[in-house]
Image 1 (cartoon, rainbow, N blue to C red):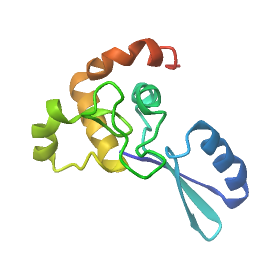
Image 2 (image 1 turned 90 degrees about the vertical axis):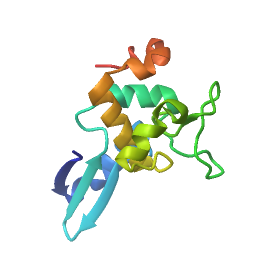
Image 3 (image 1 turned 30 degrees about the vertical axis):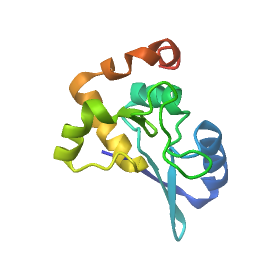
Image 4 (image 1 turned 45 degrees about the vertical axis):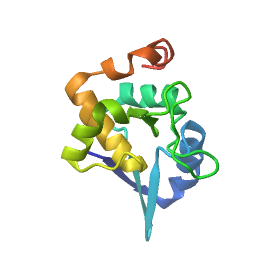
Length: 132
């Protein structure tokens, strides 16, 4: 479930500026006449947002456009650092593409709903400080 808010166009500048400071890729905006729709793919998942912030700085891609891989384990893929080796069977069964930002976040939400924060336990010293 992606959270959507419709807001007046006059608020766009401050909201987008604020969202870019928080996370350049975590918010999406679309303009329709005088209304702006802001979608936050982590709405309802504040712990998962903190986890992914620590895992990838909320980046799906490297500066050269390639998909981000883990520094310690290159099988960790994308914004949520989904481990391809451990999760490939379920990823395939769900038909999710973890090499896209949307697919990576979708699978991370599925995983979080099933297993909680356990799959990201190694980065807990970082993300537990960011949970509000």
